[in-house]
Every structure is written in structure tokens, then in C-alpha cells.
Length: 277
Image (tube, rainbow, N blue to C red; front, side):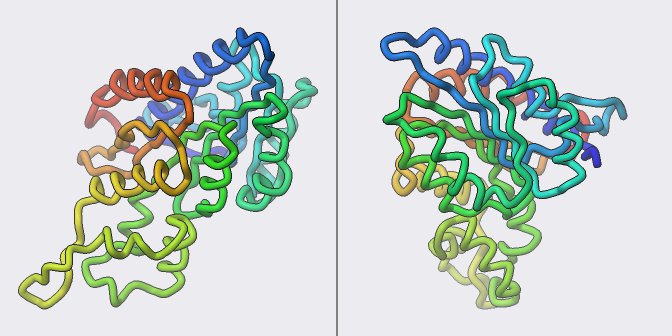
């Protein structure tokens, strides 16, 4: 039931917690008008994890958010795994403003949860989109951007991409894997970015570095999803220094982008090479 997480996942939890604290402090102080701010966790898990380094329990993002003071006005925690949602419900039973949802976040966010964070209702939201792989649909990201009321942290899962989609010979990639990438990216334009049209000695296109793909996605968050401020993401690495995923942040507020830039800068090289992802 409890996922085992590596060092950089613990760093990610620290980053999200630190920003959630700043976010809740700023929005709680807002007057004329007052704002109703909501925390959303799309892949919430069971609420805590097991540290691969220490083998002890580590609070997950939902429980970290519940410890933020001043608190969010409302919490929505989603997971597809019934065991995890049951564990979450038991843990948060004493909180009347915490809602645990079991099901596919791609459907629940659009049909039930984002509708509770409408800009015109003076509501705002911080949404964590932290899938284990290519399990998030672009429609969710674009909807958040178009609403103007939601800020997101997003896991850009390059390990899953490299393992299943971004092969040296793209012709050999299974069609189902390409469809997963299309759903995450929003269309098939990633193909034009992921491969250099210059052919190698074997006549195949050359795969580009993952940082080029990540930068293209950052621009996509701005130009397609419409987020005004998308800082350069922070790379999360394994023991060999290879990037496992990038953590993105996107917002419509310049002050939010500045705060996250400072947080990313603080954590970017912390303990590089210590412990595996």
C-alpha cells in the first residue's frame, strides 16, 4: 500500500510543501475580496511513503498540505487505488473539509473538482499532478491553464518516455505507447521535437536530449495551456545523475513564479548523487 520513494522524491515533497506554505499564507491574507483557496492532489497515494534511504515513514503530499498553517479552505485528494483511498479516508476522517475521491483523475478533475475552483467565484487552487508515468491527459493541464484560477506542479516523466516511447528507432515503438505520449502531450507534435531530422550512419533520425524535450513542453505550457509564468523545471535524478523526471510549476501570477524559482534554486543541487530516485 505504501510506495517506497527515493531521495529526490523526498526533495520534491519538500519543494511542494514549502510552496504550499507560502501560497496558503498569501491567499489567506487576501482581502477585498477574500479568496477561498483549495488544495488538489491528483495522485495522492495512501498519504505517506516509505523512505528508501531510512526505511522509515515519510509524510506524503496530502498530509504535508494538511499541516500547512494557515490551512487551505478545502482539500481534494484523488487516487485510483482503492486500498490507498481507504487508507486516506481513515487518516483524514477528522477533517470535515477534506474530500477523498476514488477514480481516474483525468475524469474527476474535469467533471467534479475544477468546477469548484472557478475564478469568478473568488476561488483559487494549487494542484499537484504527480503521476508515476504517462498517466495524465493534456486536457487536464490545458483546463487548469484556461481557468486562470489554478496553479500546478507537474511531474514530467521522462523515464517512462525514454523506456517506452523515445527510442532511437521510433518506428519500432508500439502504437499504444505512442498514443499514451500523444495523450500526455496533447497531440503528436512531440515527434517533431524528439528527433533530429539529420540522419546518422544507419539512416535513422537522432533522438535529442531530454532537456530539449522538457524545454519544448515548458513553452507548450505557456503558449498552448496559457500559463503566463512557467519557470525552468527542476530535474530529479537517480544515483548515476540521469534525469528521472522534471518537476514543472505553472501559474498566472509573477510572484508565484518568482517564489518557485527561488525554491527550485535552493534545492536543485542539494545532495546530488546521494541516494537513488
